[in-house]
Length: 530
Image (cartoon, rainbow, N blue to C red; front, side, top):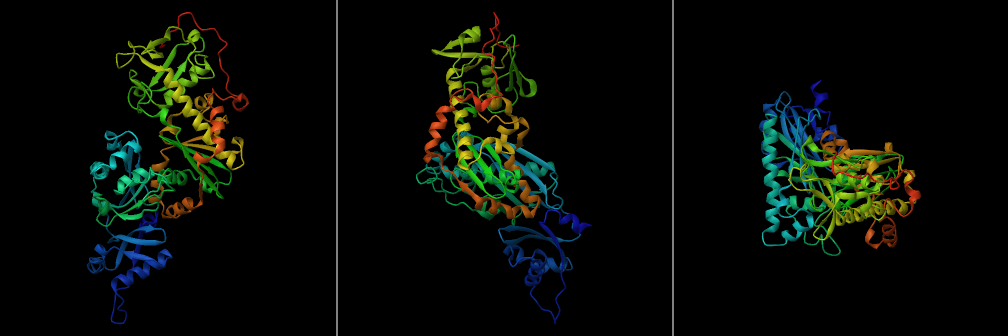
């Protein structure tokens, strides 16, 4: 029973070996490795040197009945821990989503695959720059890279202690880590130069970091622990997307599906079990915090849903934790734009329509602003507004998003209707209303049931590696099958982009489900909030 449970993830194997005799004087390490090779059906097993020095005492103390804690780098297995088969000490792994904005840690019991705790925190590098480009330029300064690396490592170590304390265990009990992040964040984490990532021809230091000792990275867990760092496909397609593909199962589907993850860039993967095509483009800036006047990350008091009444044009807002509004996040912004368009308050070019907006429109610094929440209702004591410039920025982003999707599907010779599933990952996928995104022409006009939110697919993929040793083999298979499509040299991209800079599109037949209410007369005295 114990052996069955401990083999559930594949990272812990119970081994009973015959004690040495004069007739069988095989070395301790050779004896253990030989048994593991048989059990693992492999020709490559290594024992950490630190562990090797303790091996004679460990084997004899355990009477040659031991549990070996393992990890694997492609085809090579590594023994990172040996305990008595009757030892009840916990053995854990740690999955990490190394996000540009937020970092997520998930503790995993390597014996059972259960998840006892999870935590997250804002990436401390935000204090240097909100995006990776600003951080890369900072890294080029004297001591800049070391500072950015230290920010990540020190924060991870602090949060690891807190996470372990919550489960009444020690960091020493963590033997394996899996880390998924974009190419830049992976380099920051490893302390590798990013100088050439942003300079033609855009070359990272490494694409396949593989297994690295945690102590070499400065991560304070078990001294023999290994860190699996998800591989990149290049400078703009990182390990977080490889983890997302693994989590979605797109690489094993018979039917063709698509996966989209939107942050500063929109990263897209199209394919099935036979082929995968990927591309990335700048389609997320308008959804990032701080780009719009009232834009911010999701949090208490941030607007995440918007409805404009069909008859009164009153704007009804929903905020996180139902607190007075203090700003708007990406999902709220898409909702707002969709509702403004559907009610005729902005036209097909995204321009505010004064006759419909009425007294919601105000002039501020010579520009038109629409009041979304008046000062009396907002947490800031000031009007929360969206400007014409904000709307223009959103339309450029939505046009880029749709054009990326249109370009990658057409390059594979398929249409949107051929897609069995449309996976939407990350915070974008967790909170966005697909109907709103369709209404402004950001996502294709597909049946809503084809859209599937993956939540945080990066931490999901990183978790899968620690809950099933078989999943690790899939990582390189996924990476090696991806064909990357370079949009910068695609001549059709700009033509499609121009056509998509209308609401929902210049070709209305592509969005037959979108019906506006622009013909309806506005109320006499519209109000900003209802």
